[in-house]
Image (cartoon, rainbow, N blue to C red; front, side, top):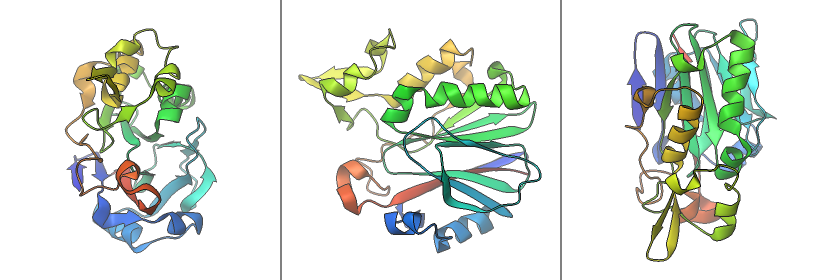
Length: 235
């Protein structure tokens, strides 16, 4: 478990100890894990969507006091509201946190390979730009625990989904006739194309969920896998 705190915001990247089950997600429950995280981050409101590996999401506005427990559907959230924790749940997918210190905006993305291939990263940033007027060059990006190329083996049909990105050789690694996907490098490439400096991308918390058994991993645990929680809030 990692907690990144500043005077302006806090980020929680959870592990298997504070996680949720698929049943709790389907029942849209406010679990004890969520209550513990809310208490730790000192937040009044929690928002998590029912993720579907797509490119839809939600802006939490200042007058929105609803608590979202895995509803409605979507794969990104953003807000300027203080003490509102926006989160995603993952088990090998990449949690991506966005922070703009100029407009005091935060966002979070559930980035599985389907979402990444469909453009959820770029779409989320464009939505934030359109809604709030953020400059992409001002954004800070924090990458959380996810499958890393040490373990994230993929097949050719997976690679084919990324052929529209001309420089796909940067984020696919070949070792002994096997292919591995590097989602971190993929985000670095996309960010560079959007005018975001690599110096503003923080990868300290981007540990591998497959080979580190402290984390939930669908690749390792299959249908038994729970989902760890990532959350950010403004103070």
